[in-house]
Image 1 (spheres, rainbow, N blue to C red):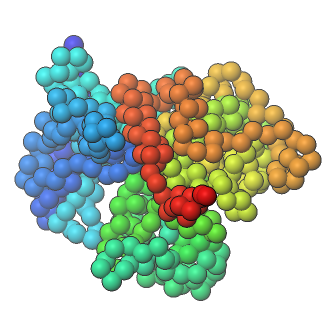
Image 2: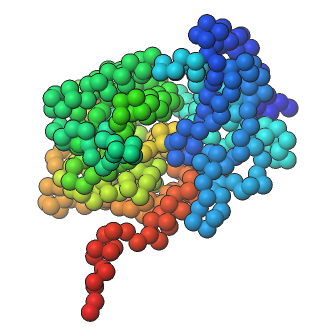
Length: 465
């Protein structure tokens, strides 16, 4: 019986596609290729190989330690996260359709890869490597579509702060502009960076549509057209890679840390979601009420609200993420409720054809967040979960008036506990993925708890007598 790897390599039309990429390599004068994949934390990792070896890598793949999917990171007890040094090496095979020449370096191209277990493994040789978050999302989405007849389309709002550099080239904690929201003059101050980001983004297939200066120092949000979830995840990852390159060229630092400043808004990455049956938007209202989503849409929202605590662990994945939820006044989505055009709730119906998941920030791994959202939505559809009545007003005022609303987790530790108790969201992290993610994030939380910070010193150094 053929393995997953063998079926992948033997797909109809793949040989012809490999030849087509060779023609692109030769025509563009590409001499080097990055074979890249995405780690558990959303980092781009992989190998670089001279272009003459394209055919060999496209058919045989490259090898790298399994632990690369966890950034080859060691926990606070000196144990490798996910996989020990005795583990086998993964096999990475390029998804040929993602081949793209880098516009800032025409001699170099990149291609995303799907990961497999080693061919010589005792258990499941050549099977899909389940710590491959990108491959997992594609397979989970295919399964969701096969079972429901629906697919998830998504757009993201990737906020980030452009920071100044120190004289030694290290990033400072100082934005390049003032924190004036939607201010065209501050936007214009960053226009050289914006022009370059858009130029590279368009060259790499992102349909850029709009942007603005947000309300933190140096904070930009540039948007591209929505698409199927897996394509949007690839484009967000590509966008981050582009911003890093533009920062090198322009002498600036693109910061995706959720909360580098207090007293201003954090870097969010709201996910705008809709469910489609082929080319029909299944979220659209069905009756005369043009605001209320279809039953399918309401059940999807019900599923997300049901699993919001565990979802938060995926969509707000760092210790720093939760700084956002402890500084009020900046529309932080801390309450597990939904409403129409309501920016004080975790979910809002932002237009008749979509809804916005707000409890997600700039550090998110989109392959994990979209997979987790698919699991929550599927549970909502399967169980016909009712999200309840929408909150029409400011939820802070509603709570003051007696409304009982749960908060989302306030720390990474609380979110990890919620994930540990939610088998539905765990199912979005299949096989090794949950173990790797949980190990990585539990270690991050433990390291934070075991650290004496500047706040500790200022607060307690002279505590007694």
